Image 1: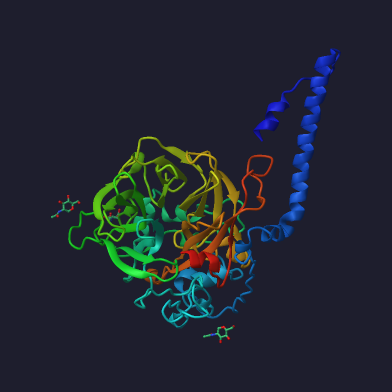
Image 2: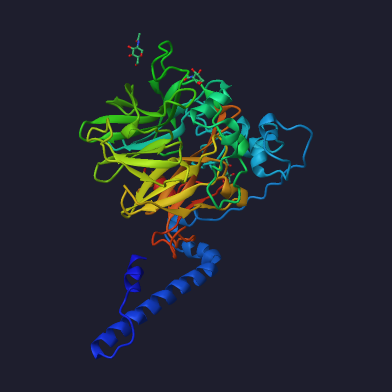
Length: 502
Ligand SMILES: *[C@@H]1O[C@H](CO)[C@@H](O)[C@H](O)[C@H]1NC(C)=O
Ligand SMILES: *[C@@H]1O[C@H](CO)[C@@H](O)[C@H](O)[C@H]1NC(C)=O
Ligand SMILES: *[C@@H]1O[C@H](CO)[C@@H](O)[C@H](O)[C@H]1NC(C)=O
């Protein structure tokens, strides 16, 4: 894009001097050529959107299965008498959507979103034809037969033990309803004003659809950070609670009445320590800080070092990302969740450096998950609608500190509602799959606000490749980066060759 702009101020007609004339002819031809190319790409793009899938299928043979497009045709049941308060609160009666059904604890199709224990993924029992299959949304049992408790999670691959460790919020307790007024005040707005604010990504068809369920009013006591280990990313052994809540000291960040979300662990090669960063808050979400903990072992116990407001700013949903060169970065939602901030950590990963950039300003994104492919940085984020699902967006940048460009919704398959609600889930992490270039697992949470401990995991294949399919918002043209795609599957597994090598 920049190249084209350079030529805009090119030499003018008329041309009496021979050499100058030929320069301007060359320049104008170039301008014309570039314009034609641009128009052509716009037109041909329209035609390739459907053919696009075929094009992508012909890529890496291991990826073909993961890229199959599966549709969903869920019939919304006819309206019944009473809806649960959560669904009834939602504004004027119009046609019920799948999201209404999702938010309705008494929905007749509840089992579609939250299948019961009978269908749980059980690595010990399912060994056989069903082994290694992920079923997004089903209860997932660990090797002791208990549902995995690792919400808002993150993953490391520990080279030293050749093992994956999955960390997340251990939420196995009752769900409370926090005070709505306190929560709204925490964000500096009245409840009504808060309800009327448009927190959905602009241009999204589901704008204002979820306004009745904006805040995270439902909470559980902090129990701690759960850790699970696996060699195959499917069979998970419970390694226990590696960072525990504080029972009695009410002034402690980890007191059970507070909030601990999105724990992420990275390994520091310099110090040989495992460092955990997490969102620390009070019940009102007014503290808006990050907490740091450290351990000599991936399985803990982690020592809590304290919390801070990074760079002096509010920090809510966050993640950390360790780059190939060993430099790690903190990325957090700030300024009432209206923008993200990014900045490098110190060499020991225990603090932030002063350097910070504001990214995706005014876009109201949270739940960031970063990954890198062929020198380009990618990020998946969600909108800010509390526990209710919304539309994911993919972003890309040549430099991790920005500028970051928004590429569009990465979701493919399911149906329109599935895609606009990120398959009824919210991003938390992206796991690289070494050996299959451009392939990742998208890790997301399907929150169950009525019973947060029963929130589910949605893991789906994420593939980088194929042409981008949405123009930049402010530029005339399409991004140079390949498309990021997350494919819906009711049931899927990693290619067998990948499983054998691990
Ligand atoms: C596994 O699949 C094979 C071939 O489809 C079938 O013959 C066999 O009965 C299946 N076994 C189980 C335990 O489902
Ligand atoms: C939450 O806010 C309310 C009202 O502002 C306040 O009384 C209460 O102490 C706060 N609770 C916490 C845990 O900060
Ligand atoms: C309670 O926690 C605070 C903050 O971490 C700490 O300063 C204080 O010493 C603790 N009190 C006790 C009695 O452990």
